[in-house]
Image 1 (cartoon, one colour):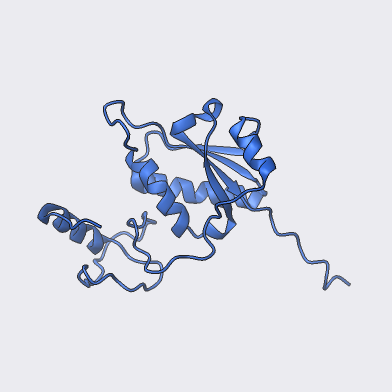
Image 2 (cartoon, rainbow, N blue to C red; image 1 turned 90 degrees about the horizontal axis):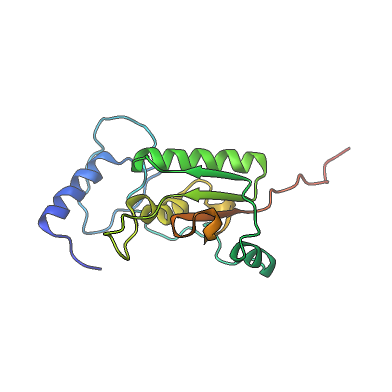
Length: 178
């Protein structure tokens, strides 16, 4: 991990002052403990790597062979899609959280997330939203409902899109019925 430059550290300190954790977390030693500043309580994207311990209920990394085949061949049809073009980081985080909430409530299995490709002059780099999506999904309140994340087939956006595969909805237990 590289050290932050003076300008980056000053910017990071300003970001830290504006962020309120959902629940108390231990701050890394290099960050200064600061009192939360009064401000809007809107849902904000978490800073990258702000969680001190890995979340065991995060998105999975494996799917069965039939899912992988359908995705790589472009045969899977998304149940819903979300296009984040035109969003900034704050609104993209909010839109993603709400889309996941709706998809889970409907029992959807496949969500297509379109983040867009980075500008052509940024060869090999990702756009800001695409770069943040992986971290957002891992710290999301819906992380336990995500089975896997895969790159989309070219017919669904290719490098500018992701498939978010949601876990099968839990069926109500037959016990307790009378």
